[in-house]
Image (cartoon, rainbow, N blue to C red):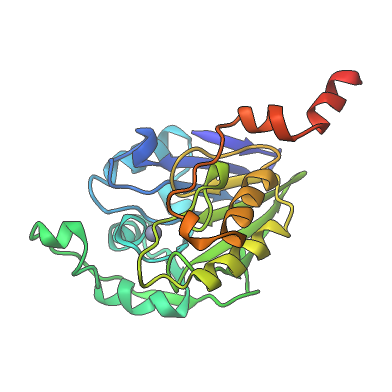
Length: 262
Ligand SMILES: [Zn+2]
């Protein structure tokens, strides 16, 4: 489904298990069409990927148009579908943070649910690794890479100026309403906090995360909620609940009432 467009460019959501867009094991999968070339943002779980291909075709994007597969990180719900998509696109270039390269090339998902069910995975060749502040071109759009360790060491976000909007593909680093990706005893919470602080400073308009809902305006407020949570007592991080939107807007954002006075 098309979720943002300018005259020349578009962003589609073609996968998303939690929203019923594709197989339930898929993270959200976006396509950004930069004119002349498109890129997949993440590749999904690789289970029933034909479902996403049908969504892509319904949006009118030829699969051969996809020249790049950009991974926000390599957890299996994001990266296991790489091998299938690389073949389906006729050799799209896979790009990932250096710390995730081996996971994709050697299909290192041995601890994942799917492996525990005895299902094998296939590796795929990585064309380029992406470090902090690198730029990736997709057609005539430029995506800035932001390394955001925390949820995983190989987490990166992609920032793009899309028409009037500052758009962030946030992976599992930040979700709507101040949500965050899974954390464990191994999580570097200090790194996570610093990553979210960097994202909070970007003043984004649009948040396209890998789970839960996306946000098409004033998304910076959603990132700020997570920054506040991670800057407080860490014992609260996992259990803390934030007020639901629009309750939060109504209680905490006086500028909404300015709109009513215009
Ligand atoms: Zn993840």
